[in-house]
Length: 49
Image (tube, rainbow, N blue to C red; front, side, top):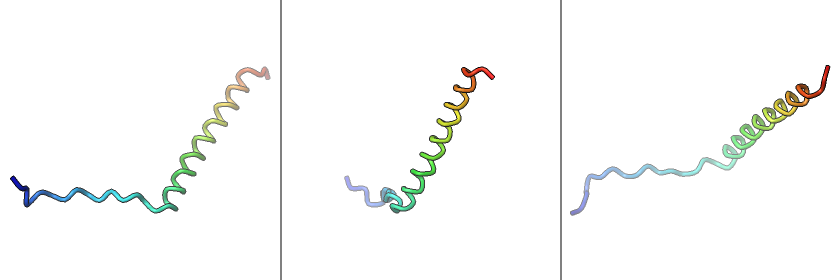
């Protein structure tokens, strides 16, 4: 049994290196800022004033 009219699987080529690098730094930057804000918030919750 041969499937002659079967659809071709989509080509899942990785994005260019620059796009992956930019996405990595955007995601890492936002997570880094969120971590700094959480650290600052926890310090300000402990320190009186």
